[in-house]
Length: 485
Image (cartoon, rainbow, N blue to C red; front, side, top):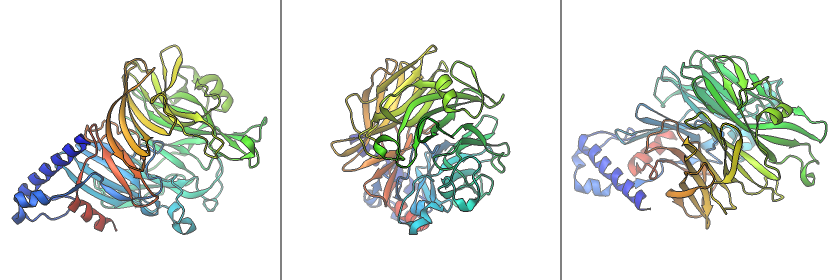
């Protein structure tokens, strides 16, 4: 709490400097005639930069949701009607700008807009020409989009919006160049500028695919399947998957994933039919230069990978009775993969029981780990991490304690066998937090986006750094609210 008060004081001082220099915040005119102690003393700040998010506005799986480039952090989240909203923070001028609406989601318009779908949260990329791209709006596509050749359909349409000008978030246009049959967008820009968009090609019973662009996202190749959905013959279910794709070394991409048992209606655990039952942890590598896929041992894989091949070649950990929720994966200084996975025991509910963040890693010969970040904790926790070597792993974890939402840093110096809490950077009473992945090449002030969930609407969004959230002046905040309506 002291750190957060200190940050607010720093922001007040920075705002005072802005007043003296005659600069503006979020396009809000500053009256230099009011400069002085009285004006500075009356300046008020809030710790969040927006409060118009809805539903479940942020997630780890849709990523990246934020990017730091040229001293500015660009952020995105799910706003009113489940539309994508974008804002920026300039670390040099301490100026917030936005949020601005970047597109129109079909998901927020179904059933009169009274029910949140939450699968179309925005994913962000900045191409080599500086244009900002947002991928959003799909939960597998709708039957009105036609036949899905790689799976089934549900609602919405996967869309692609791009800024009209480089590094400018004020105006956007849609590009009709990706399949509408998509959800869980994840996008990576390679060192040569090539763009890879990964997603599930439809609803639960669909392949996972990628589309590639070599012209800054203006056109994309046809979808390529890399994880295969198919009906099982031993039980009344279909093989399905949840994947997370990230940047590896050089031209490589890394993929971690878990297996989803997509039960038929009336089948499954206690006849519950479709649930969130998922198990196990898998890992594989994609060399984008040679177009070759391999497991952690370098053994070649043929696409699309099936359940049988995944179990034989790419299995990192069997979870047994534990139900999983996939997390992130990163490489250490030796090039060895580390995986965050959420796992907990099914409590009989349709969504399973609480799942805690656990750490799994490859030591060059075998997969190890599976230990909880917060030992003894039985609630829900989610987090992302950075790893230098097995003796230097840091997680930023959101969890609940005594009814309050907590976001804190946890550190391990013993190969992930145990973690200790370093510091709390955000805490809210009677709430829960939804988080994004850690921002790549992040500024120390801005490491992660956090949503404070007390209800399904008017949700506050924070940009949190090493020591806490980046404040915003109340006048700038009010100005942005008027501009975004």
